[in-house]
Amino acid sequence: MTTIDTVKTAVSHAARLAAANVLGALIVAYFAYFAWYGERGHLALANLQTEVSKAEQALDTIRGERLRIERRASLMRPDHLDADMLDEQARLMLNYSRPDEVFIVAPGRSAATARHP
Image (cartoon, rainbow, N blue to C red):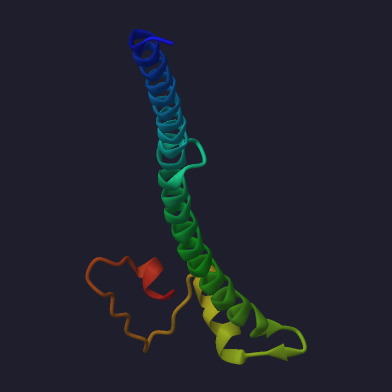
């Protein structure tokens, strides 16, 4: 084997090794890109976490409203009727008031909404 053949063999071997390294780097880059920007990547996870957080806040708000309504409804049950609640609801529905009552409406609220906090 001559020196030229040895050099050709060494260059060929180095070229194959470099091609394998480049191919490996491209594969790693491909998976890294999709791990970050892909449909199920890091940014998609962050967006989903934000949406979940907003949905949990909305759920907490709705649960609070439901509890408030359930408390008010429990005062109207036949087995445990609260006279004040019955009076309030009857006045609200029938639009009644006594002559000695004074209504104070807060700024920015109408008389209809002033009775319901």
